[in-house]
Amino acid sequence: MIENLETLLALSRTGTMLEAATDLRISQSAVSKRIAALEKYYDRKLIQKKGRRVELTQHGQKLVDKISPVLSELRDMFLEDVSLGRGELTIGVSDAILSSWGPAVFIDVKSEMPEVSFAFHTYRTPVVLDRVRSGEFMVGVCTGSDTLDTDLQSEVLMYEDMVIIPSGLGDLKWPAKSELPVISIEDYSGAWRSFRDEVKRLNIHREVALESFFSVGQMAIAGFGHGMVPIGVARTLNVPESKLINLGREGLNRPVRFVARKSTYSIPIVANFYRELAARLNNGPFLK
Image (cartoon, rainbow, N blue to C red; front, side):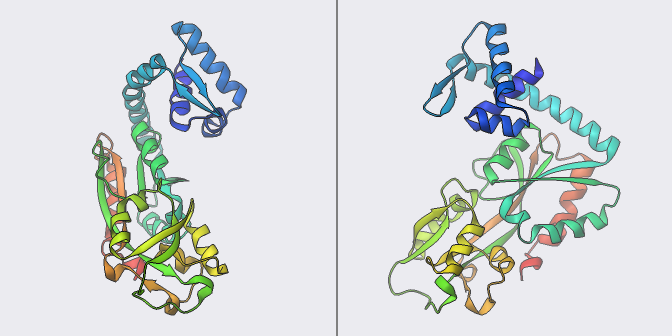
């Protein structure tokens, strides 16, 4: 029964049978069978198709609202047992962090916690937050503002400067005399939601939105337009510092934060990880 309920939660989170199956590492037919078993058990329709996506019915949403806190508490209990018994820490990390400066920081932290086994998972910030909430991840290292995440314990570790990669690595005068069109991350990103007002203040207009900062950087390098990315991404792509327009000096940056459920925040392995990570990232020494 718990597997079936977990499947309904995954479907409510992802919106498609394929994504839920990928999320759970099972087949689409297994997802369908589990949902069908739930509908038979409760004698209610729990999902309905809407185009290519799947939505919860009123009964499905009511069930999800009821079971989410219970399953989260169960996960917390088992995660704590695992972490104490095996010394394992399950960490969700925003993909742009784990693809740039993150590994160098994490390996440094690991050297101070040799008894701990780190299990990393990389997703976009909203997914990381959802999985921390659900208890699948013990902690998250992600970006964006915490104004909407009051249910989680959230601490800002540092602020990472945003930079502009000139199109084709050519010359770009800054500040621009007129509105500057750029390629950057799309609305769903936690980073974009944290600094979109500052973008307007600097007279920058996002002309093209992509799903990945690394894609933005590569498009800019190729000459498709100016790209606005975190400085860690630009450095990972080996863009010369002399070519970058650093917007951090203008107050444009993205917050990097540590998140955990309030019930797991005080677990020793979590508290130690936060302390070691904060010691390395306060004031952003890795990105100077």
